[in-house]
Image (tube, rainbow, N blue to C red; front, side, top):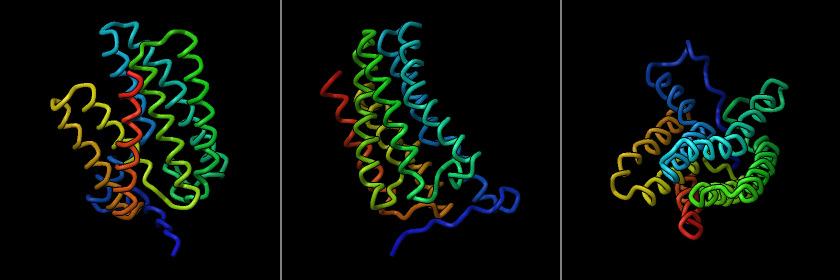
Length: 205
């Protein structure tokens, strides 16, 4: 049976629990986490403003452009909503995002970006390609794919001190379950896929 998440009710009609889930789902959207992670790792890579600049450049290709594609698609009526709850509608935006990330990797490599930033973007590419391949036939959670990958990266960079970051993935998962956007299996698969893709970071950093 094909999974078909219901359209969420208007915010004003939501219960307090649903309103909290809506807010968390929006705040912890994949593009937001991608941008935040790139800025953090960018700064950490050099402990200076130059590293933050590299993070900003990477965020443009990995977060801002993909988000722009989604916003434009929603405005044109081609996409259901900002989280693209209809699986078949996800393929084109993900493919365009893939092109943007590849362009970003090419530019970062050519301009001599810090190794940590370059490695992180390559790991994001691996995660995006893997998610796209799964999405062709199954609705994996992109929220948890990105959140799981982000938590793994933070653990690889900062060690046990980053364990509280797991609350980010937990909050994202809770919000998607409350909104009935995914099944538990889709959330777990997304987390596992993202965390596995993040291991690419260790090979390049």
